[in-house]
Amino acid sequence: MFPSEKSVSSLSELAAKCVASHIPFELVEHVYPPVPEQLQLQIAFWSFPDSEDDIRLYSCLANGSADEFQRGEHLFRDRAVKDVLQIGFHLSATVTLTMQRAQYNVAVTFDRQRVSSCNCTCSSSAHWCSHIVAVCLYRIHLPTQVCLRAPVSESLQRLRRDQLQKFAQYLISELPRQVLPTAQRILDELLSAQPNPINTTCGAPDPTAGASAYEYTSWFLDDKTLHNNINKILVKFCVPAPIVFSDVNYLSTSAPPAAAEWSSLLRPLRGREPEGMWNLLSIIREMFKRNDRNAIPLLEIITEEVMACEQIIVWWYSTKSALVAWGGGGGGKHAGGNCAAQHACSSLCDEVVVLWRLAALNPGLAPHERDTLHEQLGAWHMKVLDKVAKSRAHPPHPPARHHSNRSHSHGPYINGISENEVFPGFHPAMEACFLEWDDYQIPGVTYTKELNPLYHSPFTIFRHGDKQNESVHQVGFPSYI
Image 1 (cartoon, rainbow, N blue to C red):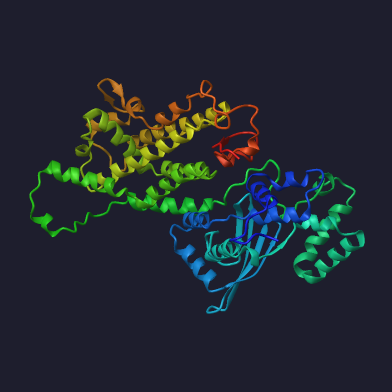
Image 2 (image 1 turned 30 degrees about the horizontal axis):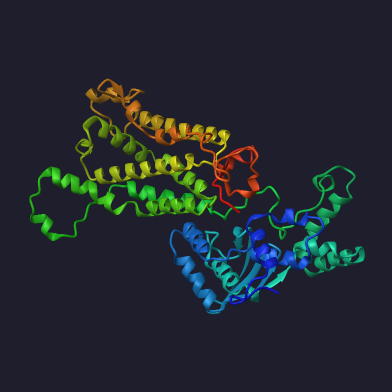
């Protein structure tokens, strides 16, 4: 039925694999003459991710380390995954822990070789727990041992009226306590003479049938956990901490003050501190290379958390302004234990802007997408200036009287120019939004009005805005099919 590792794939299997990677299953269902059921099963078979690299990536993103992924590997090797069943584009299994005498139910939804949602009955705060990892690894490494069935909607179409009635009654009798109240509510709405969503909508939802024709599927990103983890990293890094020197000879040396200051400044830059944040930024770069639609949402999460930390914003502003005013000697102005952390945070913010500039240079962006991105970047830039102005107007330690002019809204002047004009902020990324590719058209790469977005690899920026307006903010990194 399905090819083994050493067999030569047939043309139909290669076609099914290509369709499973790029085309929504709803379009396959609407093809006439109908696609044979055996070929539909092959499409569903190839729709699950075939590499564990992405599973590892999103598990590490959700949990902050590779520990959960490694636990999932051990569960898979210990054969803790049982009763694996794939119905269409829905994978379910049971993970049994012999030592703890516990059993967890796992459900995974996928489409076009991306896991779009995952759930587990365990108490883990992160969605990508070790049990979900174990089930995904089982499906990747032992695909032929998974029981495969067509989507429920396809099977229901083959039933006669009496068989449909028998199916519904048996389902209710099997799980009366869980199903009966919901079944009665649905019956009341179907039999109601008043218009309601069920009566006025054609068809019915099927969680096993995959994504709709115009839905852009992306890997499941645990936004809430990411926000919490990033916030903890930033807050911890901004807290003053003593500097510990591992070299005991340092105590007997008499280095010039300038040399000691530069050594303090270079230490976090060499180590890329905070390490967790730089790791996330490197992951975003890798996502850009792989056309992963979650690159922009992850970058947005990082930007929002950085913007929420007032100390980082003030440090960024002060460091960049000092570099312009004193030609790179701004460290002496902020002497103290937090001087190294200040410069590390400034470098972190600069890297965030570089990544946004990279996103703005995408040749597949439509003009309205560039305008949307420019508007958001401008809003963040103004937010930085507002936070700095408020911080100077209400400092934590009241300044001396001769420093009171620093609370002015436009900030101090450098050679007759306001600090706000000197501070680069998000301007490099905003300027990249004005770049047009009209004179350098590359088929399949640059934006064209006639391009079918289904055959690109688009991802959405500022996804929370999609609920208000479904027609905006599709940012695509194009790739050939």
